Image 1 (cartoon, rainbow, N blue to C red):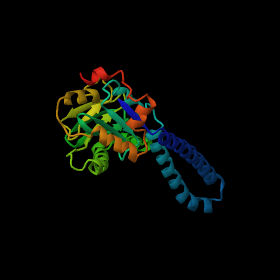
Image 2: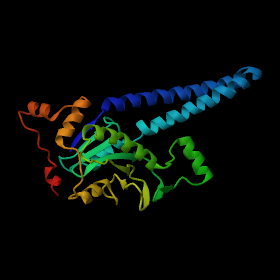
Image 3: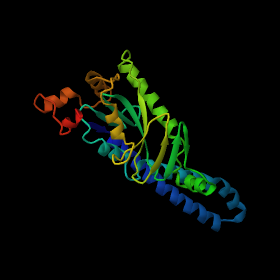
Length: 262
């Protein structure tokens, strides 16, 4: 499987998350110190505006830390979960209009990863798991409430569909959204979801790997190698021709080729 990950993008947002987190903590500390030491008549009015703004900044920093710093990283989890699936697959991460895009013989998929670790139930379009006042309040402070992942998954698929329609307008390719949970601690109760909900962990059912294997043999329109070459050129990636030239005129054969035909 070919994996292309925008490491510079990840590093930039990790750095921004770290900076914002420490700046927000320092700001909160300075705000409380000012409140206790300044003249009461002036500190009260200033605090009414300063502390809520600092709290909002802190919540944003926590959310960014969950997205860009928290381990395990979805990029690594997805790559590991799909390892050995076959050389005809390509996984693009933070390159294309959707953050995680898998292209293979079974079609074009957007993967919307979820890192939450609790127990959730999905039935149709409805999710349950963030229940109770205390759970909601603590979840809001930790910025780890699940909400409805289908909303984000639809947006990712729609954005990728625009690119597919641009480079393959007459192929009838429909981008398929997937929701994948990356934490090994999460527990899911799945009842006929409108979008496939899967585990990244191949030892759990239903897993992303098993879902793709179940699709093998189904004829679905997908992007050809020529389309992938066009994506490479559009986004400044190394093309197959450049790889062939660097390897003496032939594309490298991956160890997972056998699994590609399984």
